[in-house]
Amino acid sequence: MYLLYLPLSLAQPPWLAARACGGRLMSPVAPGARVVLTGAAGRHGRLLLSLLRGAQYDVLATDLAPFPDCPVPFVRADLCDAAATEELLRGTVGVIHAAAVPGPSSTTPPGVDACWGDKQMLGLEKLSPATLLEQNVTSAFHVFEAAAKAGARRLVFSSSVFAMGWSHNPLHYAPAFLPLTESHPATPHESYGLSKLLGEHAAACVARTSYRTRAPLSIASLRFTNLVYPDAEKTLPWAAPTDAAPANVLMWHWAKAHEVAQAHLLALQAPSLGAEPHEPFLLCAPTTRFTDSSAQLAARFYPGVATEVVVGNGALISTAKAQRNLGWRPTTVDALRQ
Image (cartoon, rainbow, N blue to C red; front, top):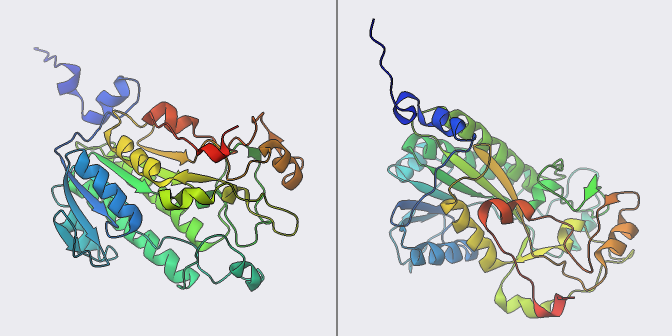
């Protein structure tokens, strides 16, 4: 009897070889590869597009909205159409899925006083909660499945820290501990945060299954905080929340828009995202929007919640994982430095 011995790389499919090398799926997308960018016509999408072009990717842009001045090939598409999405992603190596209804519905959940919708520090969408949920989840699932069918190597999903528990009534969210990390339970209170969390579960499902095929797909879900563009940085710092004007702890945080866009590029290029085929990452600036002590604010608004030592106005959302796994380096503005 003759036994045939093959090198590990030939004897095992990619996912087994990856596990044999420490359980990490190595699937970076190098410059020059085809990358599909969804949501390209939005402000966030245009910033991502600029970075992708600067990094020399072969970009195909798409959006439901028109983009007449798009500097790369553009396809106007409805990602809630599975067949159209599959055709759009055919042949792609990487995907950045930034398309979505970009915020919570102005309609408050049952039992929540509608007045809270008028007191928010961000724009709210006119769509009904159910329509918002359906559009975001359906489009995300179609993109994830189409990416796997196309044999893509890496997908980056623009998720949101709102999946952790933003609520119209800022008093409703109660963290189990601070600073928040990716291991903290995600407990959304409204349909936008729910849509992002369900999108992450869909991403994990698709990546988990793809991991055991000949063309494994790894997915990074970036849970970023409120984006601040250069023209708005001069509005910082903000006045700290008060008993009369409280704010959910997630709204205490922010991030420079171009640094969040850079995190998307880093997630596309990282040799490995982590031990799992789907990995979530929290993104925010290293300080809150306020100059007040973060520890004192946490003690005031979240009494009894275990809080690790935070220096000055340091963030109560940890970005350690993104810094460690992606090499991301967030910064703040001079007005907030202590």
